[in-house]
Image (tube, rainbow, N blue to C red; front, top):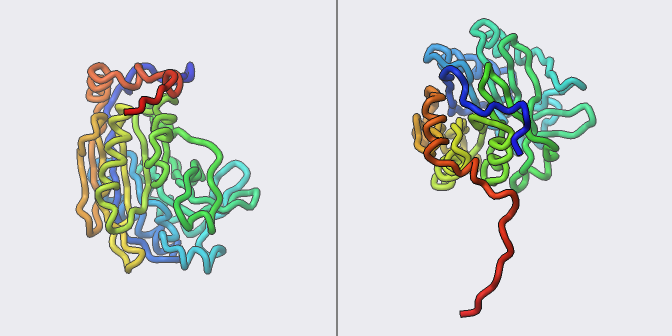
Length: 289
């Protein structure tokens, strides 16, 4: 059930967002943070107030480097989930100066010693938070990281934005959990490899339509095989139609406006979220033909 404090109506004003596709340098957290600052400036110049960068952007999604140098690639989270690392200073300065919110992928060492693939949220005051840890690990990620233990919703003014990371978005239940928590949108830093374009474009459009919510999908791009990524960053409307989409190669910052009137109209016309069954459905029978 939707919690009592979740909004029952759309936000009052539109929100301009940006989905980034870019190629970080493996292991260079400081350099990638500087690149993130540059990309955030591009988003700000386009009017964005929330900017989403790819999964593991700060250390780069490059398993050999992540395995060889965990001390150099990880950020340490404090007990209150804040992250204080001087390598982030250029990014934090841009965020603070522009008063925007940034979601960027990081490898995080938790206070209990767990290592997670995380969505780092840099708030408008420039404070970095390890806000969400990827719950569904993909393939060999399980050898390097531990799964997250809870979902998370980011509050930006009166917008509620669920957080997911890449493979999380392949599971309808993950996006649905965000929507049931009152999410108007779903932010997904990701790292899709070349060859997965069909699935990349289908999963996140489906999550938007499943839950009649906006989806902001950021993705890594280019790089050397076998870790070559396919871009296609996008923002989807609540019917799963792309408001903006990047090419399969090349850096880009895709800016789009999330319109609460469109959210309200879609949910009025397509009431799947309100009509969802309370459980997995009624009893089933098997018929032999």
